[in-house]
Image 1 (cartoon, rainbow, N blue to C red):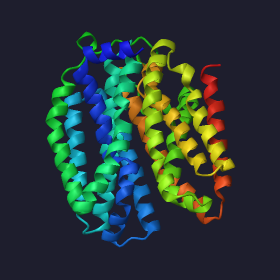
Image 2: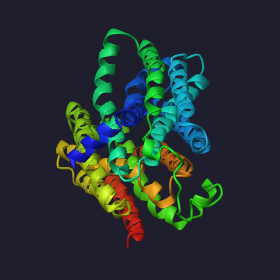
Image 3: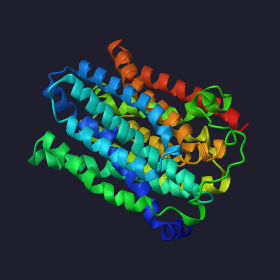
Length: 399
């Protein structure tokens, strides 16, 4: 298996690096990074926790709407032009968020970071890997997806170091400069597409042969709704719990340091499993893993409900990382198998927008449950039930 990865990397090092860096740069719009600046954003704009949470959720939802409408253009616009649009957009958003003259600038800055970072960066990475690779698609997607956990491991430490010597605004100026300087490299890398399949791929599936597969067509299909909950369950639950991990630690009397340090296990298990999942999908196909991808995180939420101490949190994030590794490989392969590659960006834009909506809803829902007096155990059991229903629903695709 590792020899096959090595041969793939030897054959297409530049284009694979393009996908890897795109997922890494997506970190600048991800919750784990933006959460480190929550107090700075609140203080600069004189906001309470609830007010900032509402703005963050609204900005995420707005970004998701734009992602759904604009993301499908990757089917008709060149990868180079879409990449340029994405990098300029996220760099401008990084600058805008440092200009606290009005709540509107905060909202637009957050919406831009969520749209161009969490949304388009991952979108161009997974769509391009799924479109330009065929037999090695699972491995290509898995390799590109390693940029996600690398950002989770490296950037929090970098940000803490930067904030110790400079202000939060200057930190974001440096991020904007990094993104602008990275654009020429990304344009050069994306030009090295696999030659044997760089031309448009001819698809023979029924959906791919339709003239202009539309997102509204997908929303009417039973198969789409069989698959979607199983892919959204993990980001929904993990986003809700990561944003409220300090509340959970306080309720369970866990050490804050031990609670925060568990994210490392999530990243390590995610990247390890994604390597194996990419090979398994290439050999067995994506359909066999639908439903199985959320079994580990179901076990994790049940362990949290049982509360065996802070180790339950570590076990949850470790198991969630296993699910995330499988999800990462599935995200760029499953939709290409089900709908072909001709309209892959259209399909993935809708799916990614749904994921953004889920991550906007999750913090709002958990915050409401906390304010209503729900215990951690009750919340974990509710999340477990949601995931189990999604698993049972997904099994209909393979049964």
